[in-house]
Picture 1 (cartoon, rainbow, N blue to C red):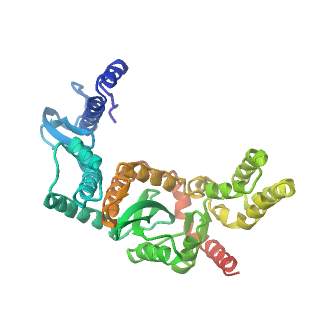
Picture 2 (cartoon, helix red, strand yellow):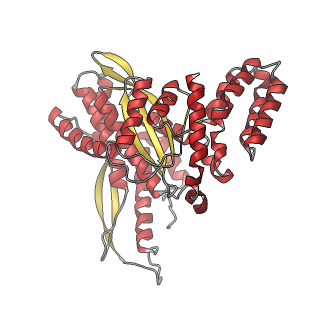
Length: 411
């Protein structure tokens, strides 16, 4: 793969920032994206400019300029041409889909009268123009088609490992501002590829809403699930038992540690956290139970509620021990989904309050579609082929774990 080089040096960047910050960011983005285009061209040709190699697949044939609208203004990109095979880039599809969703959402805010004059000024600054209601309507229709297709596609692969979580956004509804839960599910396929397999907007995280979300995944074809990882929200636990009764739940160990720490006096938190980490990394469940008992014995008199939390949640936090040791690190937390939620929040900051539920689904759906493209292009999660092939042999232990969890839940 060709190396990416930004053509501006540090002095030039500092000079730009000192003169005009808006122009500086526009210039930096233009330089970065043009460098990506060059790198993509070199990768597709298997050769750098003027490089002679036996592996070259085609030759360069000049370039063309393309005006590209971003949230910080219009920039000019120099798009390479190839002599025989067309040049392909992911920049326009991925970047502009999310940008179009953002612009459409901001335009809706202006048109529906729920935004301030500041938002209108931002729109005019970003896009160089204002938008009519009909124009925004057409943009929204096209985006909605793409997001709806992604959101409701059939799941034809098997996904042994699933993680779920929700994050909240402010939405204007019936002349008042409410919080809406965006539920997201990430699946890891039998080829060890991560994929965003579902998302949906709900009024809140109730038992019924989580059950509806998991049922929607099942109706779209989700199968072959061996374990579901999440935090300890009671709605998720209830829904797993109803929709996937033979699938055990893995309590996210990061969330579990936080829960235990919340009950521990501050002076013991660091040492207790290190002890929990040792417990998670034990090679066998027997060794982990022994470490748990040592922690309870050592901290029982100074952090009684913390060790009680540890004792009550231990088994569900250690479901992952059923799997081979080399796989556990990837399966024992929902940290990856938490990072994705932070990205969704970051991308929504410019909106603040969404004008309606549809705009929330449109913008966040566009971002999730963009992130999913990155997952599919990335290297696989590192599982051994023989371990993946042997997962079915664990089914009895996994079903038994699920049944034990349901008994505890019922009790």
